[in-house]
Every structure is written in structure tokens, then in C-alpha cells.
Length: 55
Image 1 (tube, rainbow, N blue to C red):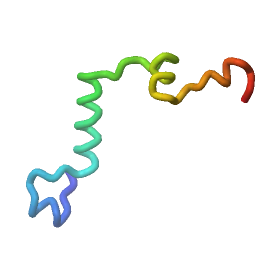
Image 2: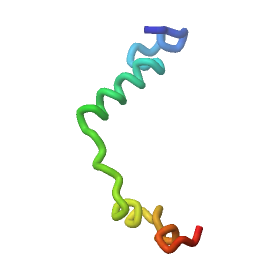
Image 3: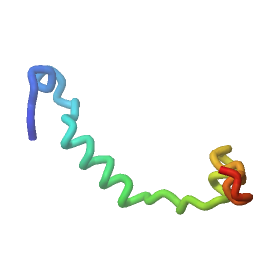
């Protein structure tokens, strides 16, 4: 684990490696639900234009 001057003053501060490891472990325990067309539409990210062939 890499430590910087700031880390020495704050023992609770995570470096990037620790943060990424923590986030990956958290995601493995609580995976996101699959992305579906319905979820994209409800988020306003899918308008349906592509379905009609109008790009």
C-alpha cells in the first residue's frame, strides 16, 4: 500500500489502489441489475429512434 504525506496525517484516507479494491469488492457483493431497454427508457436514455431505423 502506497502512502503519501497526506496519508500519514489521516490514517483513514485510502489511496487509489485501496479505493479501487474496495469498490470492486463492494460491487461483487452487490451486483447491479442488468441493463434492459425498459431501464434505459425510464432513465430517459433510450428514445426509440434507433428502432425505427432513424439514426
